[in-house]
Length: 262
Image 1 (cartoon, rainbow, N blue to C red):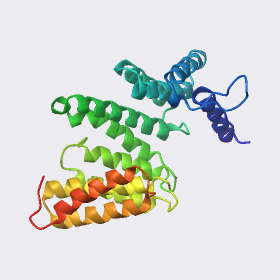
Image 2 (cartoon, rainbow, N blue to C red; image 1 turned 90 degrees about the vertical axis):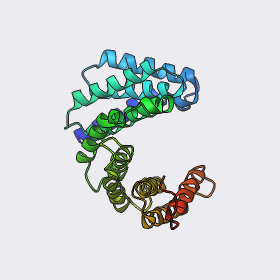
Image 3 (cartoon, one colour; image 1 turned 45 degrees about the horizontal axis):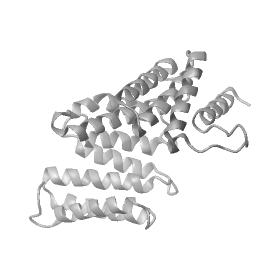
Image 4 (tube, rainbow, N blue to C red; image 1 turned 45 degrees about the vertical axis):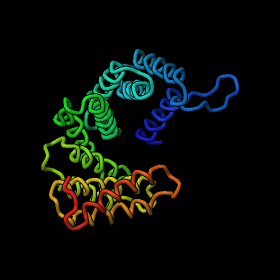
C-alpha cells in the first residue's frame, strides 16, 4: 500500500471514530453526530483529545473544526463557530499546499465562514457588509487552484466561488464572472454527479441576479431555462423542488417584456 493510500485510510478511520463512533456494547455503527446534542458534544470532546495528543498533525484540527462547526450550526454559539474556524485555519497552516487534503481544508473553511456571515446577515441585513466574504472567496479560489480539473470535487468548488461572487464578495459587478464559473462547473460535472441539480439551480439563481441587475429580458429567459433544467435533474418529491419553482417564477417575471427590474 502506498504512503498516500495509508494516510487516506488512517484519516478515514479517524473521521469515522470521531464523527460516527461505534456502539461499544453492540458493535453496531452509531448514528451520525448530527442527530443529537449529546452526540455532537461527545464528538467535540473526542476531537479535542485527539488534538491534544497529535496537535502537529493537521487532520485532528480539521476534525475538531468539523465537530465544533456542527455544534455551531445545531445548538452552539458564535464562540463555537470561531473556535471551529480557528482549528480549520490551523489545519491549513500545518498542511500547507502539499497536504493531499489541502483543497478540502480550504473549501470547508470557506463554507464555514460563509455560514457565519449568512447568520450575521439574517440577524442584521443592513449592518452586514459583503466585503466580509473576502476571506471565504480567497480560500475558495485557492481550493479550485489546488483541485485537478478532472477531479470529482472540481465542479462543487467552482460553484462555491461562483456563489460567493454572486453574494458580492468581490464587489457588485462580478455576476457575469459568477455565471461563467457556474457554466464551467456544469460542463465539468459528471452526468451522474448527485449534486448536478444544485449546480444547475445555482446557475439559474445567478442568472436571475444578473437579469435583475441588467434589466435584460433575454437573461431572464436563460434563467428560466436553467431553472427548468434544475427541476428535471432533481427527484420530483425532493424539497429542493419548491426552491427551484420559486427561482423559475422569478425568472419568468424578469423575462417578460417590461418585467420588473428588481
